Image (cartoon, rainbow over the protein chains, first blue to last red):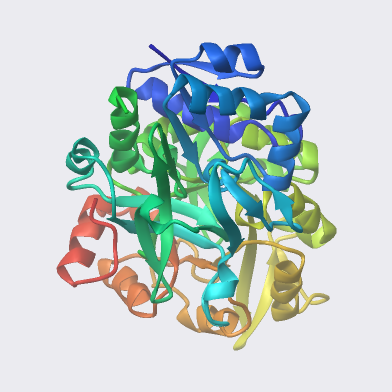
Amino acid sequence: MQIGIIDYGDRSTGSGNLNSINNSLLYIGAKTKFLSNPEEILKSDKIILPGVGATSHMMKNLKSKNLDNALKEAVFKKGTPLLGICAGMQIMATNLTEFGNHEGLGWIKGNVVNLKKNLSEKDIIPHMGWSEIILNKVDNKLKDSLKNYKSFYFSHSYSMLPHDINLINSFFEYGNKKFVAGVSFENVFAVQFHPEKSQISGQNLLKWFLNWKP
Amino acid sequence: MYQRLIPSILISNERLVKGVRFDNYLDAGKPSTTARAHNHQGADEIIVSDILASRKDKLPNFKILKEISKEVFMPLTFFGGINSLNLARECMDLGADKIGLNSTAIENPSLINMLSRQFGSQSIVIGIDAIKIEGVYYLYDHCLKRPRQDINLLKWVNEAVSQGCGEIRLMSVSKEGTKEGYDFDLYKLVRGEINIPIILEGGSGTLNDIEEAFELGINGVAMGTQLVFADNNLLKIKKHLLTKGKNIRDK
């Protein structure tokens, strides 16, 4: 089985995060491939949707190469398991607000808003560093693999607010408030944090994704 | 959110080095081996500074950056005379998660804005080197090896934040490599001005120094000498902080 990593093909933001994800997957023994066209997406066994740069750029890049439709077909028709990471989770929402209002992929009804909106003046933004997640709705296998390792590295200023709170797989606390650490439905699992930068906890999550049979 | 423990390693000519007050550098081993050890001991992130690149106006050592990035599964901040969008992009391609700017940003403040618009402010760290002279803090220029009289330290910190940087790495030059303890007065001075994360560095020599920093609620503490030329390591430091009930990531 091969894990496909979506390559937005936008070199202006660099491909560092793609390489980090690739490195982590290779480290845990996965076979990987970068996906940069619709055919490759539809052939892939599993897909990782990383975040690279601002969400408006990501959407523009996906649309320009028709990757958005291929992802939709893979996820909703073929049932390909997909892991969204950071801004790769955020773009699943209907409404995005980073650098002005724009549309996301629309897979999850909801908004992505600046953390500032729900925090006080003195709270530090970006939310950058390691936070422990509080599991909400996840399968037992994932619960087991994260049993002793629940801290993950976050680095973001925006946060997802899904209309349907049943989609939330985990939370994190910041400034005495609860925020969404991840959302999921059927064959889609997405997280705001960076498993590829989260040492053992991250590797455990990626291993779970490798074996996940939704 | 946990407070962060951040090893800070200096690179010169493919070697790990460590000095005192930005001078008298000694060889301290192979960078990627040390980085691997830090990763396995649960460092929360790592700062890598190519001191030759910024001082001698050379390109950063890409080979070493790549070697290190393959060894660590945690965020990596890279400093090394980065003075353009292309250079920043190249470093990110090679595995830097955050770009650190110091003298290049002082020379050209709009570089901060350009990079933060491209990569997001969370990816841009500004290095502030401060030196205390007769009770007054000055911005220190490590290229010229002297304090800058022409730029006010706090004014520059505010400028960096308004240009869009996401984090400050605050280095006390007076304390660097001395193992005399962190400069908390410097930290409080800068903390009072801004509300983005601050990483405090310079002077940490004992477990108590780090404990004290955690008590002040500092977002992250960076340490070099303590991990290179002292008998401390991250496992020992973490264990100490956990015993003291500090806000540190266990696993």
